[in-house]
Length: 99
Length: 398
Image 1 (cartoon, rainbow over the protein chains, first blue to last red):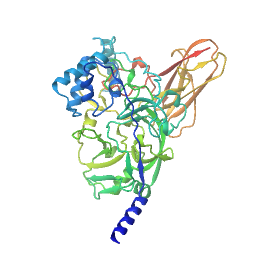
Image 2 (cartoon, rainbow over the protein chains, first blue to last red; image 1 turned 135 degrees about the horizontal axis):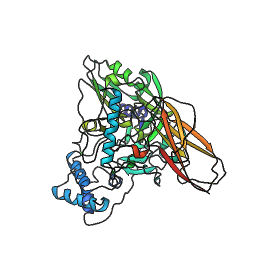
Image 3 (cartoon, one colour; image 1 turned 90 degrees about the vertical axis):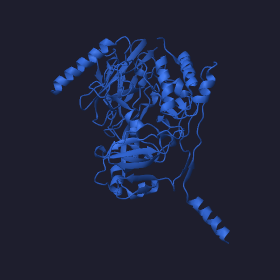
Image 4 (cartoon, helix red, strand yellow; image 1 turned 60 degrees about the horizontal axis):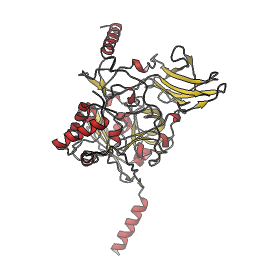
């Protein structure tokens, strides 16, 4: 009897609730393939899509280096010292400006 | 120092600033009409899409011909990737706490039933809207000019909510944050602060946008609306209001969304301003919705130019149109003002007589006499914020 009451109360509480579910949209943003793409794959995508990289505009090495460091220090991305340099190299190569 | 002297000094400073670095610092027209995506996000038509995680969507130019931006076309900007997708409105609440006499746990239902409902029609604009105009390229998403929109919001006054909780004598600031979270748990969430004495009667916790529930990507079920101010503090999915005695120095207050605290709000890339201030009030701005640079028209056919203008709430006095690259200007017709904070629709009729390219420019002037500058006269700032250059589109006359 207790179980039936419990089930009934659960049913009515669900019925009374105002529940909404949303399906997130997922899009693939492609960035150039080279030997350092794996560095981007293992460090950047934890927190954001590649769209964030593609839409920063072209920037110099100093900008990209500072940004990689900021991703580690402020946004806690697990970027090793080695990957810090490789990611900077990748970003400067593909999204850099002439200095 | 007298105000006039200060003005002279600021002109001198900005002139010197620009002269020194002219080859590198040249603000131009923002990127115009990027292609919309083929993919639609929930409750949105396909928009210009910069990122899916977190979602960043821009409204294309042709939408800006009406005072109210349809919900499915309003831009989207989130900072954090972990955005809740499951909502139980029975258990969703805004927690009001800190320096208050009574802690509140306000459900959306309580917000609707226990407080006076207020409607505000207001323009929402990202501080980085039109950022792609700045050169050298600044940090941040290189938005075109569609990170803005105007909606009719309905909700409860923030002041009324704070009054219900009862402010303690030393209550001076509030910290607000939403239910979106960073992926890495150590990261501070997107916290914004408002000084209690500066909260206007028009600042509301909104639960409706254009007569419907707030769309998921615009902050369902409740978001803050602060008419007249850039939208960096219009916190979405609002869940937390902490009343404090002092300013708390959060990352998104102290580091992000700030401009140089000088008269021109400008600086050099090599010598950033030491003192900065929050973005706050929006600059006067206008934007042409029709025609666009893709429009082809026939010579001697009638053309009605349409667009929107807005400012921080002083109201739009006039919108001027130029067909000769700024040499001469004529007044556009202004439609009804829905609210001082709303988009004001302008229109201008003409009949292009000659074949070839025709450049149309629009410039808004507000009731304080402030007018939009030419893009080239807008000096650089590190975040690419507050761009409000004169808009232009170039159409082809066949």
